[in-house]
Length: 239
Ligand SMILES: Nc1ncnc2c1ncn2[C@@H]1O[C@H](COP(=O)(O)OP(=O)(O)O)[C@@H](O)[C@H]1O
Ligand SMILES: [Mg+2]
Image 1 (cartoon, helix red, strand yellow):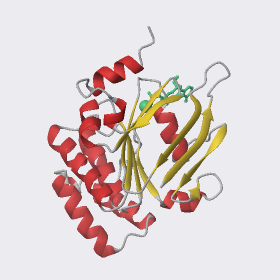
Image 2: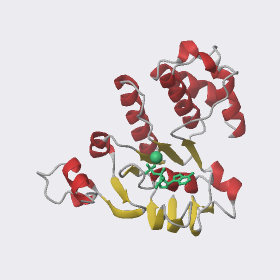
Image 3: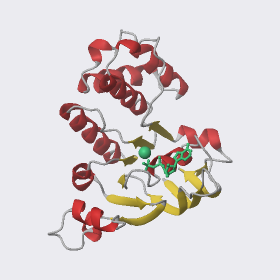
Image 4: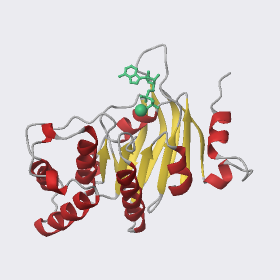
């Protein structure tokens, strides 16, 4: 579903943000992407989604190269960024229909999905209002709803749990699991290790631009008495 090979990226000559990153995600897999602040998570996700380009390496999404087959690659995923820029002056429902139009979601499917996701996130009553009247959490939930509408094969989210209340956080976890059960794949970054521990098929750990682990929780914390938190802190300890 996603194949990243030898991704390397520097924003300036002195610092390397990503160093030869390789990652492969299969159909149906739910992958948690963790790492300290500045490790390179957002950079990786921005390269996968074609927002920025890498200096070296390649990204293939559902068989489509993001650099040479961009439209097909972009139809294969949706993305919820960490600091979303969203059209403030239109209503929630207009925004959702706009996204559904771009991804060719049929009228029937979009009605059913908008109803289902917006009710679960408890933003259904706000959809007629302009987005500039939404709280941060409501905007976040609108963006997640929009990203779920196309039911694209790969669902990518950058720190989606930030700003969500416990109810919405649970809804998001269930929707991510549901997406994978239906054969889709999910890649999301987070600092909430408990979510990763309970939810993910595999965990990718990045530190200083290098992938230092990509495996199941059991294999990463070989000793089952040790929590992911302990393992993570040990692996990313620079002292
Ligand atoms: N636009 C940018 N210009 C220069 N350096 C950047 C830029 N974005 C990120 N970086 C640097 O790249 C590294 C990785 O950042 P980022 O991918 O945002 O990490 P994370 O999402 O894991 O916190 C950091 O050292 C950060 O300072
Ligand atoms: Mg980030």
